Length: 364
Image 1 (cartoon, rainbow, N blue to C red):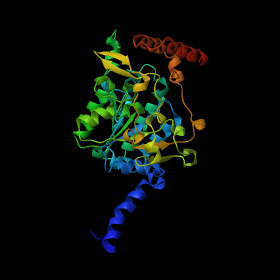
Image 2 (cartoon, one colour; image 1 turned 135 degrees about the horizontal axis):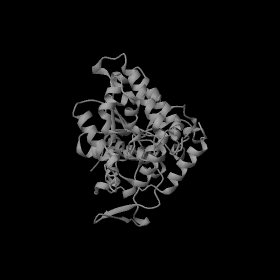
Image 3 (cartoon, helix red, strand yellow; image 1 turned 30 degrees about the vertical axis):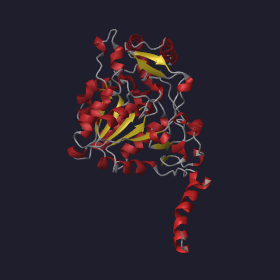
Image 4 (cartoon, rainbow, N blue to C red; image 1 turned 180 degrees about the vertical axis):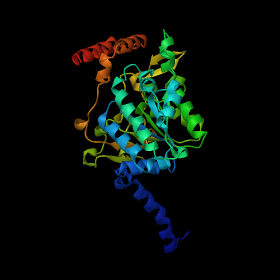
């Protein structure tokens, strides 16, 4: 059959498109584009009810950025709730009253961040206090219906009744906040900023080799996205200098979307180093997975954006045992913390570091 010249040209079009698609230039992912981060986060709320921002526990730059975000005049006009990891849900009513501007005794308020399931979070006490005080200040001029609410995501542990059962509370540290977000945010058609350690944002758990069949593998994000139509917008912050791009050239601070970019194509272990072992759950027990069976995963399937707050050499981090110095000299405070560390099964060196730290503060 004779093919006309016009038809030959038409036949060549898809061939040329295929060749172009397979060319090395076409296979190169686009570079990530850093943008001003607060505006980008607020824009994410236009399409997402839940935005999850990494809480790099004890990091000064991360804390300063969160405060700047909450204090931005646009924030309270868009966002309704802030869900925090280091806040005991037993004290939700106390926190509600405080951020509304009511008179709340300080000793009652501080139980919300001091009585959590995490017994080694002393470096966050002052940061949580500064955050909720910032929310209270933002709320002061606002009408009640536009005031921000701080939702406490840590399970409602009662330390007066903890004996040998601390582990059951730890096992709720993802399922409990996921339920709070479902009931207090999504069911009420509100928008929430979630401030948690970024491992709680994994869609598939690196430690379980990305196998999500066991309840132990679930995270806050996997539970929300598995149980609801909600798609969480997740923002990663730590370990960015290990990524295949020179983030040091980015403006501080910056945020970049990673899907379709070299950052998105990178293996997720560049964002979070692979643990020395990965585990499966079989018959209720954890079993190491052989190294040759470890799976890989593209970062863009785990993370939506990265936040750059400066080079690692500039980061200022408070060690976990550095409680506010005044607590070292408050009668019974250190003893209470040491007792909780022992009950939670934390390694002895954590207790030793706390004692050494408070000794070094000297007499007051």
